[in-house]
Every structure is written in C-alpha cells, then in structure tokens.
Length: 166
Image 1 (cartoon, helix red, strand yellow):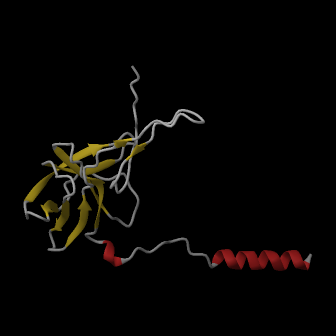
Image 2 (image 1 turned 180 degrees about the vertical axis):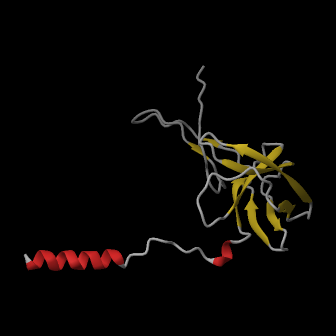
Image 3 (image 1 turned 30 degrees about the vertical axis):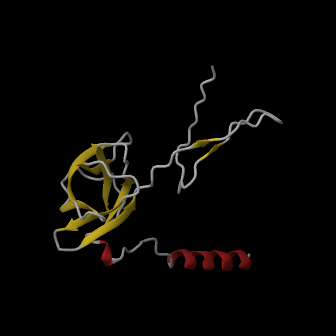
C-alpha cells in the first residue's frame, strides 16, 4: 500500500510541475513567409504571403501592412505585386499577391515583402531552364519501353508522358 501511495504522490508532484504554455519569441512581429513558384508559361504570377504569428488561426481578410515587389536580377526590371484575398476550401483566408509578367526560362528573381517598419523579407527564385526531351529508340526486349531523356533538367515535377500510336 505504501508503494502505491508513494507512486501517487510522485505522479501528482510531477503533474503539478508541468507547464503547458509555449512562449513565442519576440522576433515574430512583422515576419512573413512566402510560398509559390514562378511559371514561365503563365502571364500572371502568384505568390502567397503568410504572416508568421504566435498563434494558429484561419487568417484574416484585413489588408497586410506590406508591399510586395520583384526584381529580375539580370535586367533590374522591377514589378509591383497586388494583394488578392482568397478563401480556401477549408475556410481559411490567405493573401495571394499577383503580378502580370512572364518570367524568362533560366531567369532569377528576388521577391521582397517590404514592411511598414522598413524591414523586409525576401526570397530568391530561380526559374528552371527550358529543356526539350530527347526521344530514344524503343527497347522492346523484355517488354515495351520508350525511354525519354531530359538532359539539363534540374528537377522534374508532375511528369506526364502521353503516347499516340498510329
């Protein structure tokens, strides 16, 4: 009986000493994160700007106190982006900044979120080069395979090949 009582006292003491609060660092004020990609096949580019907060929430439609610009690093051409408030399927609200331009294949851009306090958050974006696939001779031994090489491709996303046999 005394062993059980001792275990109960130790457990209660341990639970009483637990602190379930999580303190956020003071440096979160005015910080943003960027999410997106530049698409050289599209005339309008989109990047989501997300305020970093110390609490989790669904977001707000209130305007962000920032301006967003991008600069094409080779030419120095600067583009202003405009805010679009979007409600997603899960009910959360996001700020999608859009700009009307078509980045060149192989170009590099710096996207900058300018805060009211003079600070900024930026991301360097490299647009992949245009790579043409090279069709290889069919390999019929052991099954039908139609290899395609994509030389110089830094990363392949959403690969899809459609064959039309006549």
